[in-house]
Length: 373
Image (cartoon, rainbow, N blue to C red):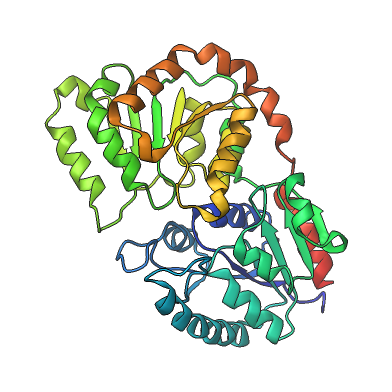
């Protein structure tokens, strides 16, 4: 590469779990870097709600291109045929974007959106670096690893899934704004933080609706619902809030999304987190040493979220509940029990932080620069 010009990078990935580490790497790129992010404009297929990555990129001034492609599916469903038809559309769009932008390297953080971009890069002989967030391997990255020059993984548990000669453990990077609050020893707040990830969780929202008043009598709540237009959970829960006694209304904060520059402050002050078990969530819980009641997505790829949840439970920081057998009363009882036993979880809060790789974003940047040079 000509050292007199700036590095040109295309990043790609879909969903909060893939976008969050990408954003962390963006924060350490040299200022002169020309960057383009390729992702999805809408969080859910067929839903008009804008994705978190699209909104965040626009807010940060990161150039963003949206593509349409099919989800990779391990079994035949009613969506399989339409997804297969969209795959060549995504590849064509990926080729068009890369030919126009002319990147030095494509950096993929996984998810179904990333595969046509990585494939297009391979066809055009553009070097590819991929990053795997999970404790195993995602389907998109499993395929993309064949095209990649270098593979970065977050955990040593992922090493057996990739070729030894081109794989390096970098850790799962988290954003600077999170580290800012992680380093603050005392934040005198106490509340329950409920999150369904970047697109929210309708199932968790319904469970919380059934026990909201009882929970609020015990502890204030910050609740991130997502903005799926199919369910209108935010509007529904806002209406429910307005029927509560004024004293309880004041204890309930409801948001569609938590801005990325606020999530660190919220995690730092939370007494307990109720969440899905995406690897991004698990990484942040480990970084902050926060106890969590985890409800793994029941249909996640290779039961990935259950594996993530068990990893955190083995570190002494979580309890796991099956969505299909959970009721509002059981959820409320479990939350109150964990809050009552908070001292037990605090014992492990500092211990788990040794599982965080320091300077993960800088390590990934180093790999990118090595591949380009």
